[in-house]
Length: 85
Image 1 (cartoon, rainbow, N blue to C red):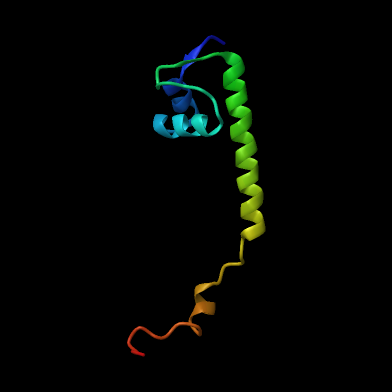
Image 2: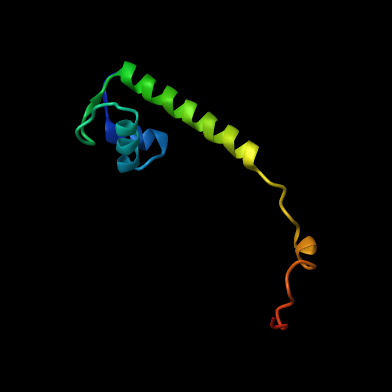
């Protein structure tokens, strides 16, 4: 694999270029513009960090997930539409 530009990596990852650049700065990866070259080693580092972050978010989401209520269960909790309180 040869060097690719930041905007090309963003396109491959399905992200907007600005969002990827913000994340790279958050990861303390020095980039100046969307045209900056990324070598293969740096691309691998970026992908690993994104996977780590994705797994953290997924683990957090599972821990905080609440059971959802069905519409039939909500009927008793909410006032009818025509009734004013």
